[in-house]
Image 1 (cartoon, rainbow, N blue to C red):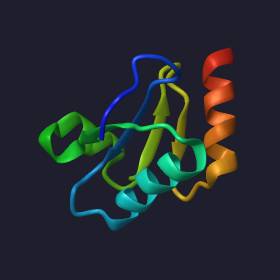
Image 2 (image 1 turned 45 degrees about the horizontal axis):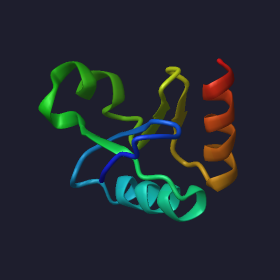
Image 3 (image 1 turned 30 degrees about the vertical axis):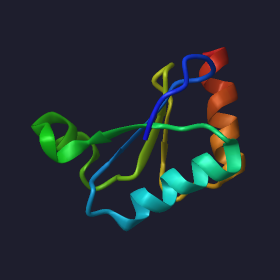
Image 4 (image 1 turned 120 degrees about the vertical axis):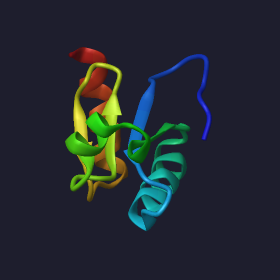
Length: 85
């Protein structure tokens, strides 16, 4: 779960006990070829309140968010929208 020095910065909010979060991370890396920054929401009460029932949630650096379920095409759209926002 790393980051590239260049390219879009994507954050995936989830929990280590969430199998859908693991699926989402694999999908992003496989379909888009980008790693994501993983944020464990159980470590932060505000994040847990905001994302608890929505995870996994993918967030572009622009602040645009994508709730699960999503596919590779939706992630690519998020990246494009995130850069143009």
